[in-house]
Image (cartoon, rainbow, N blue to C red; front, side, top):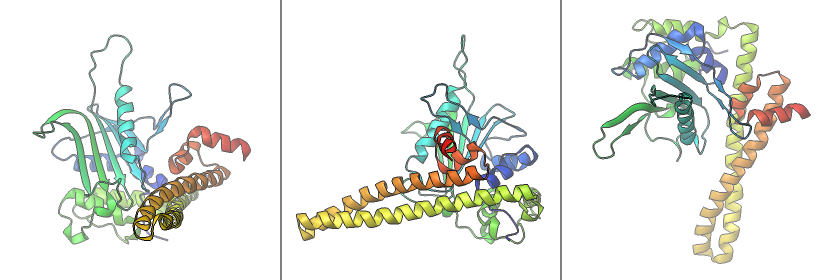
Length: 318
C-alpha cells in the first residue's frame, strides 16, 4: 500500500481541503496561490450542495465551497477526466454563486468576489488550457487592465506541471509537486522548509485511516479508475467506429478525396457519439454499484456526472 493517499479521488480531495480539521491546509494553499493579492486568515465552509429553485432546474454539488474572513466566496473543483463543457461548467458555478448574493427587496447590487479554482487532472486536449496555470479575470481587451475583481478563475492543468523536486523554487511549486506525486512518495518533501507539509503528511498518511475511512477511500478510488476506464474505452470505441464509417463513406465518394473527408468527419462524429453513449451507460453501472455500498447520493452524482434525479430513479429499480 502507498504511504500517502491519492489526493485526486473525490474523498481524498475533500479530506485534504474540505474538512474543518484540515482547513489550515486549504488556507495555506490559497494564500500561496493568491500570493501578493490576498492574505486569508480563516475560512468558513458553506453547504456544498446548492439545490435548484424549481424542479426543471439543475442543482450544483461543489467539491469545496467556502467563504473567507473578508467575505470572498471560493469554489475549489477537482476534475479527473476531460469534459467538453468543463470551462462552461466553471462559468455556471461562478454565475450561480454571484446570482445567489442577490437580496430580495432593497439592494444596491453590491457583490463580494467569487473565485473558482479548478484542478484539471487529465491529459491535455482541445478543451484544456495550454499551460499549467491560466488566470482569467474581467479585463479591458486592449489594455489588459482589470475592470472588475468580482469574478476570477484559476485553472491548474496538473499534467503540464513538469518541475522536478530540485527545480521547485517557490512555495506554490512545492505544493503542486507534492500533490501531483503524493501517491508515489515515501516521505513528504519540503517539510524542513515549510511546516505545513508535515501537517499534509499527517492528514494524507494512509496508515492513519480508520476502517471506515479506508472503505470510503477504496470506493472513491474505484470510482476514479472506473471513470477513467469508461472514458478510454468510449474513446477507443468511438475512434474505431468513426474510422469504419469514415472509410466506408469515403470510399463511396472516391478513394483519394472521399477517404480523407470521410475519415475526418466519421471519426469526429463517431468519437463524440461513442464516448457520450458509452459514458452514460457505464456511469449508470457505477452508480448502481455505489448504491449497493450505500454511498451518499451527492458523492455518486459528483463522481458519475448523473443528476440526483437520475440516481434516485436508479435507486427505485435497484
